[in-house]
Length: 324
Figure 1 (cartoon, rainbow, N blue to C red):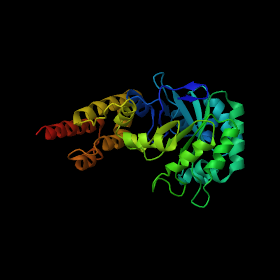
Figure 2 (cartoon, rainbow, N blue to C red; figure 1 turned 90 degrees about the horizontal axis):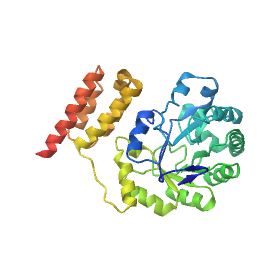
Figure 3 (cartoon, helix red, strand yellow; figure 1 turned 120 degrees about the horizontal axis):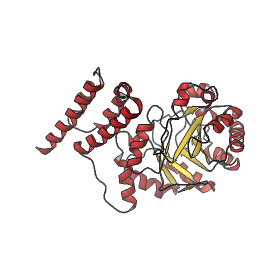
Figure 4 (cartoon, one colour; figure 1 turned 30 degrees about the vertical axis):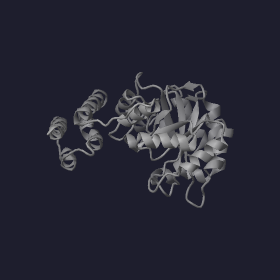
């Protein structure tokens, strides 16, 4: 997989996920083979004002490569300046034209830009002039069912120098409901010369195989399907080599959980790990006996030590249940 001057080891990309894809999450997913990971989306306005929260989202290490830095905003010059500030923080810059969150949209950023093709052109032109690294763009189908314009936006970003485009084939009004229309990815791939990355509803190796086959896209971007499931990456890569997939049991899940927790403690400390790992633990526990009660218990824990004791006990007990 090639994006501009950047060569990737495979065609699997980890989506920028607000509140999820921090450094420990990215490092875990890299252990299972993802070819490129992205930061959480970062405010261009926050970056140029040296906002601590925005700068914190850039936290990375040498092991966290290759890395895409995703920024969002509505002003071409602000985005261009922000791009120069993060140019050396990763291996490419991704522009978010797809976020459906109300706070982002109200500012004129994210998927609100799908309604303003001329502004999109100015943004791409400004950012492309500002940096030499590869620039990619993540878009949606359009604002709503009456304004589906991904082909127009795709042609604009290609003309203005983007090195690849990711399409999540839902409109802003759909948010994450309904079904992603993969036929749109196919049409975009037929229209553009630059790489097209497909996104949306990849929850199994079979989903990944079908997307590649049905759309002809150059790569796929994995999002919510990886929540508590880094094995999805490993199994997709195995399927590409005609190797069988496998489902982790409680012991294998606990090994991944332990590694994830250790990374969180190492980089952010126990207090933050206690607060933010709970959502990940809920995802890792899905489908196991007693998972509902486990989720309730971990959300009631008062310390990191208590959280870990409950977690280890749950997965080991789940393993014994399967042995019976």
